[in-house]
Image 1 (tube, rainbow, N blue to C red):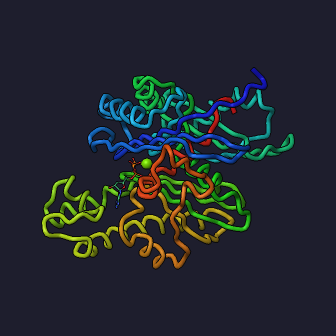
Image 2 (cartoon, helix red, strand yellow; image 1 turned 45 degrees about the vertical axis):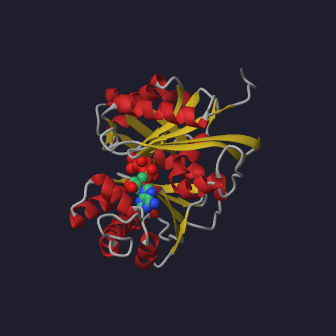
Length: 351
Ligand SMILES: Nc1ncnc2c1ncn2[C@@H]1O[C@H](COP(=O)(O)OP(=O)(O)OP(=O)(O)O)[C@@H](O)[C@H]1O
Ligand SMILES: [Mg+2]
C-alpha cells in the first residue's frame, strides 16, 4: 500500500450550465498530456444556485459525457463552491497533529455558520508554529447535503466519486500546472461561470485570498432577454454571437457592455476588500477563464477599469494535446470552460 503509485482521476466539473470532463496522463512528474476532454450542456433547471434540483437530468448528462469521451477510468474528482462551502484560514494555538484532528471540529464551530453536524470538515496546516505559539490552519467546511448530492450523481452514473475539491482550489491547481509559480507576481485568477464567479488571488506562490461571487454569464443572458424580449435560449445564442430576431453582435454591445461594467464592479469590490485586509496590496494582472469570460469585450472592460494586464488563462498552456482523441478546433473553442476540470484532473488518488 505504502508505495502504490497514485492513481489518476477524471476531472468532472458539474457546472450549472454544462458538465465538463478532462482526463490527463502524467508523462513525467508534474508534466501532463491531455487524453480526453468533453462538454455537455445542462438545462438551467437542473442546478440552481449551486444546488442539484433535478438529479436524473444531471446523471443522464454525465453518462452521455462519459460515453461520448469513452473514458474508462472509474475514479472521478468533482468540486463544489458557493454558499454551502466555507474556506477560512484560522489561527490556533500550536498543537500536535493528533490533538488538532481531535479538536478541529470544536475549534471550527465558531467559524462555520451552519450546524457543525451538518458539514464535512477538512483542514491543512499551512504554518506550523512552535509550542506556545500559534499555527495557521486552512479550514474547509462543506454542507454534507451538497457534497452528498454531488457524489450521488457520479455514483448513479456508474463511477466512483473518489475526491471532492473546492472550485477555487481547482482553479489554483490548473494555474500552477500551466504557469508554475512565479514568486514575484500577484495574480487574480477569475473563473466566470454561468451563475458564480470564483476569484483566487495568488501571491508568493500561495493563495492569499479567495471568494465566490454570485454573478456570471446568466446576468448577460438576463439583460439580453429583458432588452429584446427573448427567451433564454434565444438570448444565449445571441450572447454567443449568433444573430437572433434582427439583433447582431454589434447591436447588443451596449447591453453586454453594461453588464461587463457590473462584473468589473463586483471584481473591484473583491479586490478592494483583499487590499484592505491583507498586507500585500498589489495585483499585477488578471487571468480570466470560465465560459462567461468569452463575452465580447469583457476583457477590455476589465482592462479599462483596473488598468492591469488582463489575459485569458490557458488551461492547456503546458499540457500538450493528443490530437487523435481531442479535436484542436473544439478545444480552442471550449478551453476557457475547462479550467476547473483540468485543476481537478491533476489531483491524484492516494496523494
Ligand atoms: N461564446 C460565448 N460567449 C459568451 N458567453 C458564453 C460563450 N460560451 C459560453 N458562454 C457562457 O458561459 C457560461 C458557462 O460557462 P461555464 O461552463 O464556465 O459555467 P458553469 O460551470 O456551467 O457555471 P457555474 O460554475 O456558474 O455553475 C454560460 O453563461 C454561457 O452562456
Ligand atoms: Mg463552473
